[in-house]
Image (cartoon, rainbow, N blue to C red):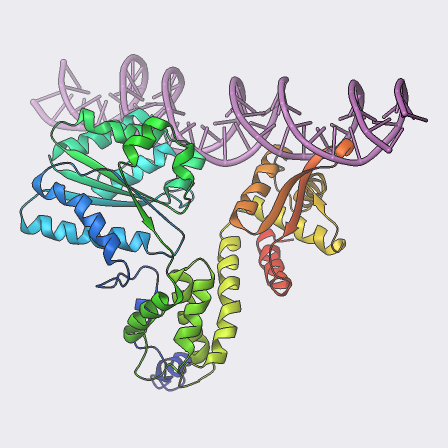
Length: 403
DNA sequence: CACCGTTCAGTTGAACTAAGCAACGGAATTCGG
DNA sequence: GAATTCCGTTGCTTAGTTCAACTGAACGGTGGA
C-alpha cells in the first residue's frame, strides 16, 4: 500500500483546526503573566522574599474557591523565586504536592513519601516501613543540604479530612530539629472554614500569613480567556461573543476561571468536529453539556469495581421506582445479589455506607441522612446526574462489572 | 389533643484483622584457596 | 572460613471487618381537658 494514501489518520492530519496551540487552555499550562492576580502575587512574593536572604519566610495559607488561580499563582511565584534564588546563589528548593490524588498522597505515610520522591531519587516502598522511618529519611534528605525548602500542599483540606492533622503538626515542628535548613509551608485550600477545625497549635503556626483569593468577575475571566485564546487559537477564528459567553459561564460558577477555560477548549473541539472554520456561539451550548459529562464519566470510570457495583445498584433501584427515595438497606441487598451474580467478594454494609458517602462527596450522588421515625434512620439517596447521561454511565458500569 | 417513652434501621467511631510489603538475622549454600 | 543466598520472623501500612454505642422522629399509649 502506498504510504499515506489510505491511512485513516490522514483525514485527521489534513483536517483544518481552529486551534493553533491547544496547550494554553489546559489546566497544567502556566502562562507568563497572570491577569488580575498581581496583588496576590505581590503579597505572596513579599512573604516569601526573606528566604532569599536565608531567613525563614512565614508559613502561608491560601484560600479561595476552585478556579481562582491559587495553584497557578503559588506555582508561578515560587518558580520566579527559584530563579531569583539561583541568580543570587541562594540554596532553595520548592516542592509541590497535590494531596487530593487518591492512593498517592492521601495518608500520612504517602504524603511524606511523595515529598521525598519530589525532592530526589530516594525510593520509598509503597508500604512496609514504619511512618517514623519515612520521616527519618525525609529529615535526612533535608539535612543533607542546608537550604531553604518551600512545600506547597495543594488541596490540603481534603488531606486532613482523610488523614488527620498529625502530619501538619509534624511538618511545622520539623524546623526545630533542623538547625541548618528551614522549611516553610504553603497550604492551599478550597474550603474557607477548613482551618477552624484544626488543632489550635497547628492553626497558629500554619497560617502565620493568610491570603484570600476572591472569585474572578466576568470581565476578569474575559481577560484571562482572551490571553489564553491568543495562543490557543488561530487568528480570527473566534466569533464575537464567544469569549463573553464562556466567561459568563465561569463567573456564574463562583468565578471559576478553570471551568471557563475548559468550556472554551471543549467548545473549540466541538467546532473542529463540526468542521467549522470558526468557533460559533452555538458551539458553546454543546460544549457546556459535554464538559459536565466528561468530568463525571472521568470520575466514575476511574473508581474501583466495588464502587461500580454500588453505583450500579443505585442506578437500577432508581430506575425501578421513579421519584421515591432509595435507602441504604435496599442498596445493600441489591449490591449483595449483584456480587453473587458476578462472583465478587461481598463487602460489609459498613463499608458500603462509606462508599455511598464517598460518592456523595464526589457529587455523583445526593445522600442525606434522614430519620424515618420509628422505622429507623438511613440515607436518602438519589442520583445527582442528569437523566441524559444515565445510559452512558450504565454502559460504562456494565462494561466494568462484566455481567 | 398534647406529651412522652419506645423502637427501628442505619450511622458512626474505634478497635481489630488479613494481606502485602521490607528489613533483619540466622541457617544453608557456594566459592576460592 | 568467608561470602552469598535463602527463608522464616518481625513489624509496618492499609483496606476492610467487627463491635457497640448512638440517633432522631414516627408510633402508639397515656392522661388531661
